[in-house]
Every structure is written in structure tokens, then in C-alpha cells.
Length: 353
Ligand SMILES: [Zn+2]
Image (cartoon, rainbow, N blue to C red; front, side, top):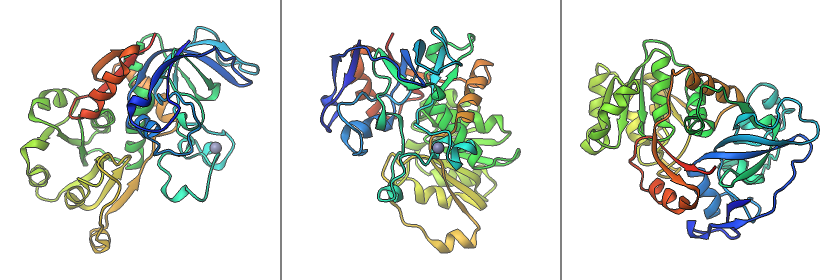
């Protein structure tokens, strides 16, 4: 079978298609024939060595869906032919976080040395190969079955992007009637966050890359759209929230927008981040934090429950992934190039099988 692999850290030109032998699933594992895979920022971090504990050679691709082609010893819940989405983090199923349904922060592989700055503990391509391959091995506990009503193309947007958005929404404890701002609303995670916050009964302000995305963002549930390229983002947020600011701001852009986001929060507002696309560092006024009773919330990927929830919503037509671009397996470099440009609405997918 063919797989995109790299043997040394660097730019995306380190990746090449290699013909590799078919592996047998070990106890508790299955082999998945990959249908579609997503392109995500974390895959780039894997290739360029930001996740230095990745063993080489490696196939990236944290987000994928497909069909079970073989089940290993002890796997009883999944069988050949089952259509599945893959939960993109490794987890033990036994630690206190896993038992509480928080598999995304599982303690397996915990390393106190790197824990304070860990970018992505246990992300799928850190330990196992990912889905930029015709076949992949994965523990069966990572699988979620896909209903027949949900096509592979749409399902491929869910395991990382939609699940991350679902977890963000659960972390900020939204109440109907509150206002929420989604920074980077046109992105892979952002366009799902808009839909999920709207489904929770909030007034949603979407900050998109350009005014040309306004209609599409409104069709996903945004009540008001602010174009980043039009400037005056904070002024627009304040005017749309009666001059008080937003109750919730979802901002995974990071360094470039942190100050603007914090300054646009209402008293008792919650800021949540699940990524740092523009960089991880920013200054914070502790006086602003306590005097306005703000909350800073971190959110990383999600739990199996989040993935099951978005699969259910998408299969019932309550939420949809927008595919911004679809590339054939051999066209991965072009897909990565397009992904790096940013500014698009929705997800970029790799059509594998
Ligand atoms: Zn665990």
C-alpha cells in the first residue's frame, strides 16, 4: 500500500509517496482502509519537527475516515466493512481523565519535562502513523461508527475540526441568549464553532477573512459577520453587543488577536483558545483579568463524546462541514500549499480511496 512519509524533519518537501508492506493489526487494533483525510495545522507541526518526540519514518494525517478491513485479536465491536471515523488522539482508557470521559488529556505518555509547553500530547501521528496513507492501523477504542446517512466526504471534516469545535463549546458553558464571537470563523474549526454556538442558542458574531464570505457565514448561522480585512473589529463587536462586549470569544488565532479579543469581552466574559496559529505568546494585564472577572479557558481537541456528538449532528443534517478544496492522494503537496495560504472558508480534504 502507498503512504505519504517523511524520514527527517523539515518543510513539506520532506514528504514523499512510499510503497510499504501491509501491516497486520495487533491485539485490540484494526486496519482501516482510508477514504478521506483532512489537512490540519498539527500535521505541519509533525513534519517540521515542532513535535520532536515523533518517531521516524512517519506518516502524518491526524484526521481520517474509512472502512475497517481487518480486526485484530480481541476486537469484538468492529468488523470488516464497518464505516468509521478515527478519534485522533491516543488514550489509555484507564487513567482518571479517560474514566471521566476526557480522553483528549489522557495521562498516558505523560512527561513532566515537556508537560508545561506540550503542544499536542498524544496526538495521533506522535505515536502511530496517520491517515495520509491507503491503510492505517489504529486501536479499536479510537473508532466511532459512521451512520449510512453520512458520506465519507462530509465525515472527514469531523474527527479533528468539528470535534475540537464541539469541545470548545462545552468548555465555555454557553447559555441561550448570550453573545459569542468566533475569531477565524471561516477556518476548519471556526466554521463548526459558529454552527454549534448557534445551535446552543447564542447570538453569534463571525469574524471572517473577507467580506466575500459574509453570505456563506450567515448560511451557517452567524447573525453578524465582521470582515477582518475591513478593520475596526473591536469597534464592530462593541457596537453589535450594545457597547458591553461579547460574553464568549473563541480565538484560536492566538498572538495576533489576543489583545483585541480580551478588550472585546463583556464583564464576566470567557475567552477560549484551542490553538495559536499566529504564535503562542502575548502579554496579559492581570488587572484587566480580575477587575472585569474574565475567564481564560484552554481547550484541546476533544473527547470521544465530542466526536460522537458531531457525527450524530452531521448525520441528522443539523451541522455541516464546508469543503473548501478536495485533492487526489497524489496531490498532497498542492493541498498543503493551499492550506498554508489561509483565508479560505472550510476544510481542505485529501481523497485517498
Ligand atoms: Zn488515559
